[in-house]
Length: 451
Image 1 (cartoon, helix red, strand yellow):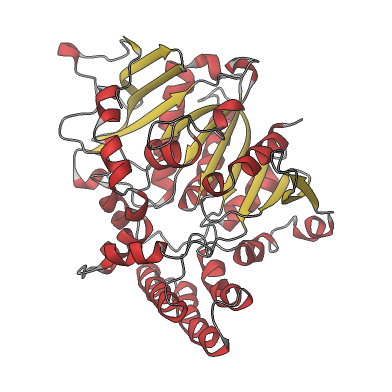
Image 2 (cartoon, one colour):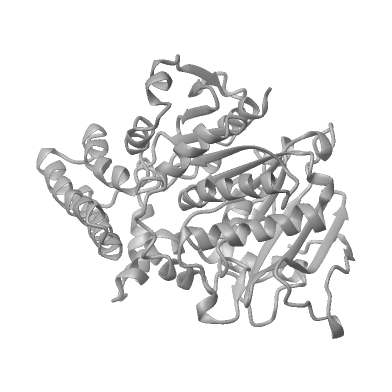
């Protein structure tokens, strides 16, 4: 479907001959489009030498105007999953993969900022192999450079707008560290921003707790019998031992082996939604004839969400619409390298970072939400690390209250809150909460945004 919309090129590039300079934080080829469906903007930010990060902003069309509703930054998982692709067109953006309007888009409540993060993800790209991020600290520094460029150069009109970071899966691990870095940048005066909260959905915060609860979760849901539970627990404990010993790459390999065992014992459970049988058969197809363990992991964790329809859309009509994607850059073309470069950091926990956010920044809302049907980051495992936090004794005593889907009128989730920490249990949803329970997710957003 052809997208027709009036275009204006904003000249924020520097240097001669129309080529952007290589000053870090420089905005490269910012485009702003306005039309009947609203206002959008996108650009590259040169976050480091040879590292170019792409963002795409949608202004909210809420009746109150974008100045009076929050701005949400969405971070995808993987690592290597594209926010501008999967999060945008498969989960919460204004259009779906068929370019049809989405009834449950978050644009009804907020402006949306999608960033292809880390560099090399989606439309983001690097010019040389040593420019990929290799740990969460590098990812955080890159994002702070991008946010400084966004708030201080490109769009200062958003400085006073309530700003939230929402995330999914590995994106939550990144969001925790980015939130800490952003608070420090605000305190130092580097960035002016009304940072209100961070929400981590089905997030890879404490990998060991997720792996160690796979067996009990599957057993409770009748997906394995007692011998199957014991088999999974043996492999899970091997993963835990390697984590305890700080053998991070070995732990990643053993985690992959535990996943394979789970698929075998359950005869193909879908890791992302236990009710959607058949999804893992697609994933198995991606793993055939792949000898590298890391490559197999990428094709299990990222590739299924960048399949043909989305790939054709992003490398076809959307690329043509955006106009600024370099000829040598293919959407998703460097994503496997992103995953591989972070393999040594993959199994490291960041639960302590979340704990510090809650304790050190009492003005910041820290939110965890979990899909009931998710296996890979199951609710049991998430509660394990949450219940070890400093706030846990008082949080556990708090009253859990239901919230209702405005469409069906039925309970769609539960909320428990203590001070600046909140936990949302979202029913009928797997790993991709906005895709599985869109109207319930919008209700959650309203509760988060309410005073």
